[in-house]
Length: 384
Image (tube, rainbow, N blue to C red):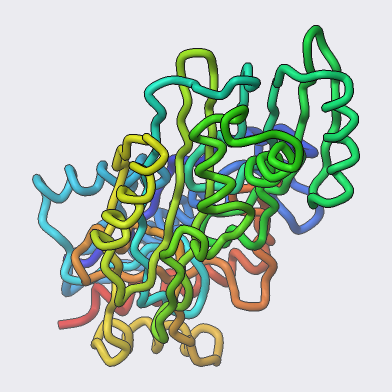
């Protein structure tokens, strides 16, 4: 059996949209809406391709399924459950990335660090981010401080990158930090509102005043995206550098938690990275809570299925499909080395605001993806 895997769940809409994120909106050749690129558009296209094969009276030599999941953005446990009851495909692709062919996906380590209590002496509340696998586009801190300290914070804005606004209240100030969202696999393409707001606070206040969670962020991550301060920075030839993203922070009177997303190279050891972080966190009296440890995906470039997808791409476009690595996590890694990501976004396209406001696709380019998808599905079912 062969398969095409797609997902219909999405990340939260977030702020900054120019149209209703859950109403498909056409502007010229562009379609806007949350999930139109990641991954509902590709899911729908796969169904149309399946119907096209049926309408053409193609007699397949192999069975083909289009499988929809609804938990890709939150750990992919849905397909793991599905494949306990249904057979694994011999070969599959997921149209949930870019062209050419993604035969290498970095490992994914997602976890949260918890303080036993909010021991920050001046932080009444600190919130930032909505999901672990996206760069926070906004953050807000409500702190107790003097007028003089507020003045010092405003002066410190000259030394810390970011956009900050101040609203004074009784006994202190609320500081809003504006950033730019992006996918956690590419944190350098966003601007982390949480880490930069933390950096601003440490220009004026001490670790004792700001508490263990913010101190860990400041001392072990700061505004870096490569894990250098944390002692886990690394890279390899097949997949590139490790990335580290502070995705979400929640500090209230009875709660203090930071959630972190790490994408590590395909030749690295996720368990070793996890143990190192646990050791670091313990020095700040923080408990480690594992969300997901997804092992890397690595299909050899000379595998027969890679050749099949290359041929489908060349037949349709006249160009050769390059192989590449990603920090993204797709359903490909749930099929135990038999699946890769293939499309729908072309190499020369912008990222179309995936995981950000105003997510969109170009209709003409997307129809070309449909042609490639159809050719690949045909080739898969006609193999002996």
